[in-house]
Image 1 (cartoon, rainbow, N blue to C red):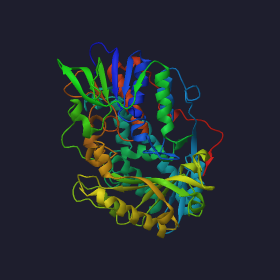
Image 2 (tube, one colour):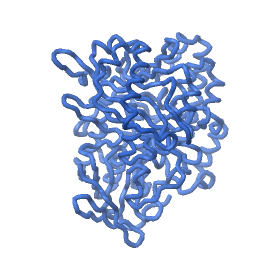
Image 3 (cartoon, rainbow, N blue to C red):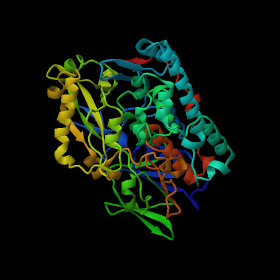
Image 4 (tube, one colour):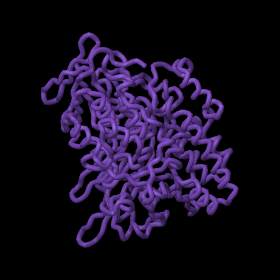
Length: 528
């Protein structure tokens, strides 16, 4: 594996998102002097927070899988979730999701195979439950075949897949499993009910592609979602980043908030110092850049040309009276409310050109106070809860819409749709404090106005994804969802670890077993 040549005593990490904090902890544990620079006034990046007058809410990702990777980052500096300051308590959600379909039927998603089998049998019959077991087994084998050698590994070249014995063996396993066929075809051949099929294919959207086009290797995503468990930390997703940041500063790392990096200054093909907006220049031996692919130019790193971006999203954050929300047809932390359309929905939002808004939207509703009662707030004697709704939409490359004008009107349409689906009161009683659109993400420097970065097409996946050892510099390393291994909370944490390996080598960064074999035990589940 190629690594940064020369001394690496002083490392600067640009960005305090999960990938940056993960990289910083692994580098600190390897003996480096690490400084993390963050332009915002808080840590977290895409897993940050919005602060309003009387409450906070998670600003980005709300789905946490593979929490062992949080433990892994803390263990790099000799801490764990309980000993960190602030401490971190992560609970499993059961169900992980609650799905509701256009015909009024619903299904809860449990990670426990027996419980999920009973749920599938209740809704679709015992034969479909048996077919679910077969699909779960196949998804698990795909996940285990690719985790160590593809997700949690660096690549110097696509040829690594054939010249490194362990990677070659994993590749052959995936070929035998049919993982390079289409995910949608495999799922629909195994399952019979189209509603259940959706639950094991909608995750392809995370990878930036429609299920009909997604490769079977992306079956690792629904496996993580539906079999390895979805979790939620006390205090919200933002508490993960806050705990990682606390662990960094407690063990010798530096963290500077509200500190913007304006450029990296090079000499002899190496980054020599990082220039800040306040005029300071910090010397360095290596730099880890976690900026989005759409912002790499300003750091002297050359992104790949011709990247295809994932679809984007419209996300509304605010509060709703608890007495209203308690009348809704589903009471769950995560609700996926599917429209009747399916293939058409993906055709509308995923094309490279000519994208449009969903004509029959499928939406993600998030109500975190149902899992953490401490998140409820009181106003004038009435109880309110934080609430978010997410609607996938095309990115700005495929649909350059005028979101500053369109956004509020589109949100009213979405809330009217939910009102018609039985979420009574949402159109008039949901107080929106923040509306994010592709224009929001564009203004933050994100590729094509999407928080989901480059799509996981075959030519942008694994060894073909933008490499984390930046071109044009001997000591600049990339981390984050645009590089190896890709989009998502667990992959962001892995990305930071892989970046640290590029700086100091694999032997100074502790390797752990695949989370498929290291399961978090819990006698109690948080039940929605």
